[in-house]
Length: 251
Image (cartoon, rainbow, N blue to C red; front, side, top):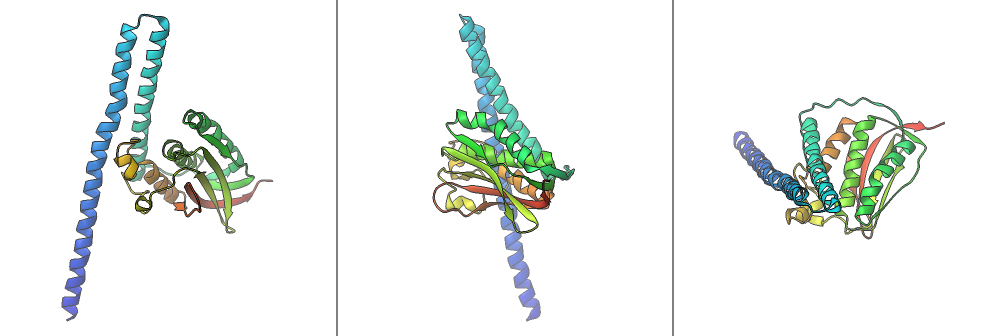
C-alpha cells in the first residue's frame, strides 16, 4: 500500500513538473515571437524615417525625419537593454554592492528622470520626499523602481503617478509606485511577475514589450534581500511595491 501511495504521489509530481516545463516552453515561444515583432517595429520605422531624410526637400523636413530615426533607434536600444539586463539576472551574473542610500535623493533623481516621459504620455509624476536610509545596491534599486515607473507610464492609462515609500515594521521599508489608471486585470494579477508575461492588453498588441520588466524587479528584490509585489488597492489604479531592509533615519 505504501509503495502504491508513493507511486501515485510520484505520478502527480511528474505531471506537475511536465506542466511547468510545458508552460515555460510556451512562455519562451511567446517571448521569441514578441521579441521578433517588437524589435522589428522600431527598426522598420528607422528605415522609413531614413528614407524620408534622404528624400527631404527642406531642412525642416530633414530634421523632423532625423528625429524620427533617433527615436526609433532609442526604442530599439531600450528593448535590447531590458533583454540583456534580464538575461544577466537570470544567469546570476549580478552581484549586489550594498551601501547606505539616502532615499530622498534617490526618489528625487528618479522623479526628475522619468517626469518628461510621463508628461509626454499626458501623465503627472510626483514623489514624496523621505529622510530614511536603506541598505542596498543603488544601481539595482534604481533599475527596479525605473521598471515600475516605466510600467506605470506606459500601461496605467491614468493621469497621475506617485513615487514614494512607507515604513513596513521596524526593519523594512516599502518603495511604492502607484497610479490612478485602470488597475491590473484580475486574471493577470497572479502572473504579472512571471518571466515573459505580457498581460491580456499586451498580448492583444496594444502596448508591446517583452514582458521582462516586472520579472526583473522580482529578481532584483530577491538579490537585495527583499520582495516585490502588487498591493491590494481600493478604487482605481495599481500600487506596486518593493520591500527592502531599512538602515535607520538620516541625521
